[in-house]
Amino acid sequence: MADSFYISTPIYYINDVPHLGHAYTEVAADFIARFKRLQGYDVTFLTGTDEHGQKIAQAAEAKQMKPKEWADEIVPRWHEAWKGLNISYDDFIRTTEARHEEPVQRFVQELYDRGEIYLGSYEGLYCVGCEAFKTPDELVDGRCPLHPTREIEQVKEENYFFRLSKYADRLIELWETDERSVLPEVRRNEVLGKVKQGLDDLSMSRISFDWGIPIPWDSKHVIYVWIDALLNYITAAGYGSDEAKFNRIWPVDVHLIGKDILWFHSVIWPAMLMALDLPVPRTVYAHGFLLVGGAKMSKSSLTGISPNELTESFGSDGYRYYFMREVSFGQDGTFSWESMVARYNSDLANDYGNLASRVLNMVGRYLDEKVPQAPSEAELDEGDRRLISAYERAFAEMETAIEALSPTEALKAAWTFVRKTNSYVEEVSPWALAKDEAKRRRLEIVLYNLAEALRLIALLTFPATPGAAQELWRRLGVEGELDRASFAVDGKWGGLAEGSKTTKGDALFPRFDDDKN
Ligand code: MSP
Image (cartoon, rainbow, N blue to C red):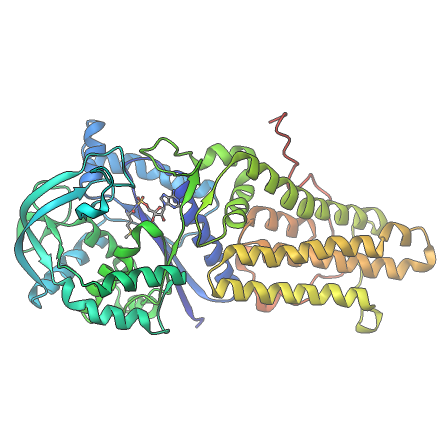
């Protein structure tokens, strides 16, 4: 059986529909999941929705609805958004499902039975936007810097506490070894620095509202929404319901998150798992923020743009490519319409789309829409060999980039090959060869190489632009779905079958003209 690769996104709050920030995490996870499938892994890609807590209760109340009714109404919008971006998740978990709620109660009960939870009282500050307790020094002018439009709440109530403080040493040890990692490195240092200052126990129940999973031994309390939410990663993986699956896929290979929720994933979550002697995540990768005009995009700051406003103009492939390529993965990045138009036109319409239409045109015109016989070793010249090694290099570099979880670097590597193929077209000038009957075989050879390069470009770029990649395979007459392709079988140079029937088709990426659109 193939090795398992389990990747998760955060589960999103459903107080509203998705914006570009949420879609950013989702697209990155999808990119990595697709790449890993091509590498032959048995991938589990999990996403979902975080439906309990005050934030959702308040959103529902504002609509005069019950929280669950609100959730049922809005969750389909999240499915639609992900469909519109071609997200290939394997599972979508909602925290209001029984398959989540029941094991969460069992987990918490076991913590209690093991003496990991005690009753105390909490007095302090709470940001409903973050669903998190805050210390005064985390506030700016009395407000949470991530949610400046929300009032901070003063909370004073009886709460259950999880003995987080006792895990400080084990967490330091965990993240200091190289077997497990918090990435990028700067995030790991940030976490270690904070943990070394010591940890407080964590308030893990709330009593002043009831929209949550009840504490099993004391139903006046609901489980703190973050404890509930983090557990999705194991409830969806079969914890407490399908032990065989759980043992096969857990621990998770990558929790992909934004940097705002690093503390929960790299401190609270592994400590909860340690408390029940369960394996901890292999990697927590915290990417940067997407900014618009310098501010974090969010629902409350009104900079939230919905993904479909952009896919209408650039298609889902254009959208996915832009965010993965333009924003250096791991760092903050700024979205602008102008940079999106520029990136789309230069990389997709010109480099990739034009190459595809030129090659398909020439195979149509000179070779009657039929892929010629593949060249033998002896028929290849130096330039042909350079093209083939450029492909091999790009592929190797992409694998390295994905090992380091960098879609941006992976795409840079792919594009060196796209550009190399463009310069090969100029070098071999098929149109000149076509004029000379004596050069017929050479014409076939270079067009085979070009069609083959296109087939492989589609394979390499499938994780970023799956729609165009599949369409290109179809136009090249390649049988089979990229969804089921693998680098091992399909990634070898020379795989394009002689006699495949090609089709020209419209531009894969029509040039974006701001005046016309
Ligand atoms: N529900 C919690 C996560 C629980 S996971 C066990 C939550 N939800 S959220 O909807 O507020 O945000 C989820 C994720 O969306 C963030 O971690 C981040 O990955 C992403 N983003 C939200 N706004 C973002 C930007 N402006 N830029 C990039 N990503 C951001 O937190």
